[in-house]
Image 1 (cartoon, rainbow, N blue to C red):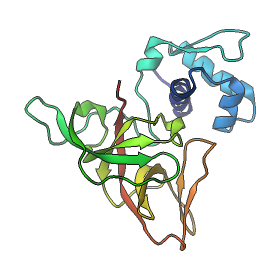
Image 2: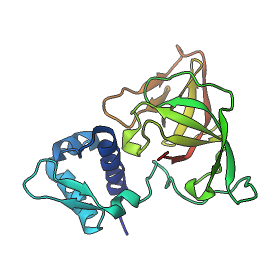
Image 3: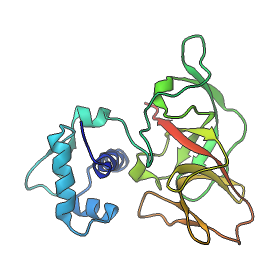
Image 4: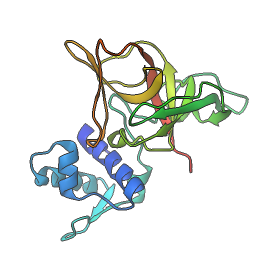
Length: 222
């Protein structure tokens, strides 16, 4: 199946919206969320998803979008790579990764994170594009367009370095948040993926900031 990056993100957005609200978005809401100037741009991408067998469209209905079984099963994507790609790392006797769940991370306003290991989780390494060093439980909806929903467990690869546009877990004034990283000419910004949330500006007034790691993929508990 060949989809553009926008179409893959639209599929993530549809799944996130339905999971959060219980109904699909309208084409106007899609256009607003993606910055399209016209609703017909949203329709164009929806029709591409329909041709790929990922959604079904009902004519004459404002919210006539239904995810097919293939659309629900298709892997979600982050900004820079698929979420569900093979990873390498420490595996147990069963071939599963043993990954510690450390606490919570905000997808919204930063929240505190419990540094203690809550439990060890056994996971299929194929769920991650990078080997995760630990998991954090997501709270908030600011990363909705990237398919990161409240209650998801995100894998984090420890590193203090990140490229522009990568999704990171950052510490801001002692609290953790997951956001897109933007390198600006004078400051860093942590960008949400939900138009209802504002970016976090990292400037000279922020005394405690660090990149804790890269987003490596996610697990959505059933």
